[in-house]
Length: 68
Image (tube, rainbow, N blue to C red):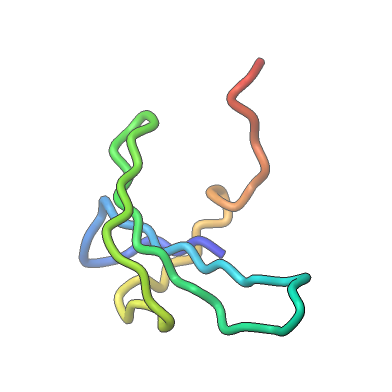
């Protein structure tokens, strides 16, 4: 799940759940800076969501391709 950060408009939080391993693990949260069109920078990661990154961005979660 991808959420946009309210106080920092160039940052998004991405939640990643690891499934299919030998044991279940807690999700990991990535804080990513996006500078259009395709420049992404990992800013931080953690085991809890950031409190100001709560606006779901469903468009970012769509499966799209870079190829025509």
